[in-house]
Image 1: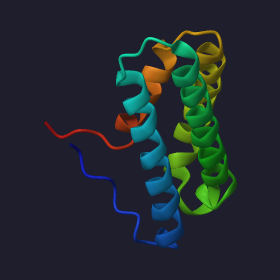
Image 2 (image 1 turned 180 degrees about the horizontal axis):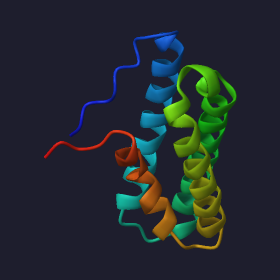
Image 3 (image 1 turned 90 degrees about the horizontal axis):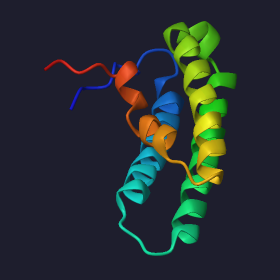
Image 4 (image 1 turned 90 degrees about the vertical axis):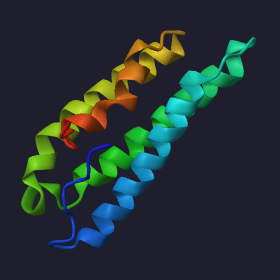
Length: 114
Protein backbone atom coordinates (compact mmCIF):
# COMPACT_ATOMS: atom_id res chain seq x y z
CA UNK A 1 0.00 0.00 0.00
CA UNK A 2 1.29 3.43 -0.85
CA UNK A 3 1.65 6.12 1.75
CA UNK A 4 -0.55 9.16 1.33
CA UNK A 5 1.15 12.42 0.49
CA UNK A 6 1.79 14.52 3.59
CA UNK A 7 -1.23 16.75 4.18
CA UNK A 8 0.02 18.23 7.44
CA UNK A 9 0.84 21.58 5.89
CA UNK A 10 -1.65 24.46 5.59
CA UNK A 11 -4.82 23.38 7.39
CA UNK A 12 -4.10 19.71 6.87
CA UNK A 13 -6.32 18.52 9.73
CA UNK A 14 -9.57 19.29 7.90
CA UNK A 15 -8.28 17.79 4.66
CA UNK A 16 -7.12 14.63 6.45
CA UNK A 17 -10.52 14.34 8.11
CA UNK A 18 -12.32 14.56 4.75
CA UNK A 19 -9.85 12.17 3.17
CA UNK A 20 -10.45 9.69 5.99
CA UNK A 21 -14.20 9.98 5.39
CA UNK A 22 -13.60 9.36 1.70
CA UNK A 23 -11.38 6.36 2.44
CA UNK A 24 -14.00 4.89 4.78
CA UNK A 25 -16.72 5.28 2.12
CA UNK A 26 -14.46 3.71 -0.50
CA UNK A 27 -13.83 0.75 1.80
CA UNK A 28 -17.59 0.30 2.14
CA UNK A 29 -18.03 0.42 -1.63
CA UNK A 30 -15.26 -2.13 -2.10
CA UNK A 31 -16.88 -4.38 0.51
CA UNK A 32 -20.30 -4.13 -1.17
CA UNK A 33 -18.82 -4.96 -4.56
CA UNK A 34 -17.12 -8.05 -3.14
CA UNK A 35 -20.30 -9.52 -1.63
CA UNK A 36 -21.75 -12.60 -3.22
CA UNK A 37 -25.48 -12.16 -2.99
CA UNK A 38 -28.73 -13.63 -4.19
CA UNK A 39 -30.84 -10.49 -4.11
CA UNK A 40 -29.36 -7.59 -6.04
CA UNK A 41 -31.65 -4.79 -4.84
CA UNK A 42 -30.35 -4.28 -1.27
CA UNK A 43 -26.72 -4.37 -2.41
CA UNK A 44 -27.45 -2.23 -5.44
CA UNK A 45 -29.06 0.42 -3.24
CA UNK A 46 -26.15 0.27 -0.81
CA UNK A 47 -23.71 0.81 -3.68
CA UNK A 48 -25.70 3.77 -5.01
CA UNK A 49 -25.97 5.26 -1.50
CA UNK A 50 -22.24 4.85 -0.93
CA UNK A 51 -21.48 6.50 -4.28
CA UNK A 52 -23.75 9.38 -3.17
CA UNK A 53 -21.65 9.70 0.01
CA UNK A 54 -18.41 9.58 -1.98
CA UNK A 55 -19.72 12.27 -4.33
CA UNK A 56 -20.78 14.50 -1.41
CA UNK A 57 -17.41 14.15 0.33
CA UNK A 58 -15.55 14.78 -2.92
CA UNK A 59 -17.62 17.90 -3.61
CA UNK A 60 -16.86 19.15 -0.10
CA UNK A 61 -13.16 18.64 -0.74
CA UNK A 62 -13.40 20.32 -4.12
CA UNK A 63 -15.27 23.37 -2.82
CA UNK A 64 -12.86 23.84 0.07
CA UNK A 65 -9.31 25.08 -0.07
CA UNK A 66 -8.13 22.80 -2.87
CA UNK A 67 -7.78 25.62 -5.35
CA UNK A 68 -5.36 27.71 -3.33
CA UNK A 69 -3.83 25.30 -0.83
CA UNK A 70 -3.79 21.94 -2.62
CA UNK A 71 -3.97 22.70 -6.36
CA UNK A 72 -2.56 19.28 -7.28
CA UNK A 73 -5.83 17.75 -6.04
CA UNK A 74 -8.11 20.09 -7.97
CA UNK A 75 -7.83 18.47 -11.41
CA UNK A 76 -7.78 14.97 -9.99
CA UNK A 77 -10.91 15.67 -7.93
CA UNK A 78 -12.84 16.97 -10.96
CA UNK A 79 -12.05 13.78 -12.89
CA UNK A 80 -12.81 11.65 -9.83
CA UNK A 81 -16.23 13.30 -9.35
CA UNK A 82 -17.05 12.84 -13.02
CA UNK A 83 -16.21 9.14 -12.70
CA UNK A 84 -18.28 8.86 -9.51
CA UNK A 85 -21.27 10.38 -11.29
CA UNK A 86 -20.92 7.87 -14.11
CA UNK A 87 -20.49 4.99 -11.62
CA UNK A 88 -23.63 6.04 -9.78
CA UNK A 89 -25.67 6.18 -12.99
CA UNK A 90 -24.34 2.78 -14.03
CA UNK A 91 -25.04 1.24 -10.61
CA UNK A 92 -28.61 2.52 -10.79
CA UNK A 93 -28.84 0.48 -14.00
CA UNK A 94 -27.29 -2.63 -12.43
CA UNK A 95 -23.82 -2.14 -13.94
CA UNK A 96 -20.85 -2.02 -11.61
CA UNK A 97 -17.69 -1.72 -13.70
CA UNK A 98 -17.24 2.00 -12.98
CA UNK A 99 -17.99 1.47 -9.29
CA UNK A 100 -15.10 -0.98 -9.22
CA UNK A 101 -12.88 1.62 -10.85
CA UNK A 102 -13.85 4.14 -8.19
CA UNK A 103 -12.57 1.87 -5.43
CA UNK A 104 -9.12 1.98 -7.05
CA UNK A 105 -9.19 5.65 -8.02
CA UNK A 106 -7.11 6.79 -5.06
CA UNK A 107 -4.07 5.18 -6.64
CA UNK A 108 -3.84 8.10 -9.06
CA UNK A 109 -2.97 10.49 -6.20
CA UNK A 110 -1.48 7.96 -3.79
CA UNK A 111 0.91 6.39 -6.25
CA UNK A 112 2.34 3.03 -5.37
CA UNK A 113 6.08 2.68 -4.95
CA UNK A 114 6.43 -1.02 -5.72
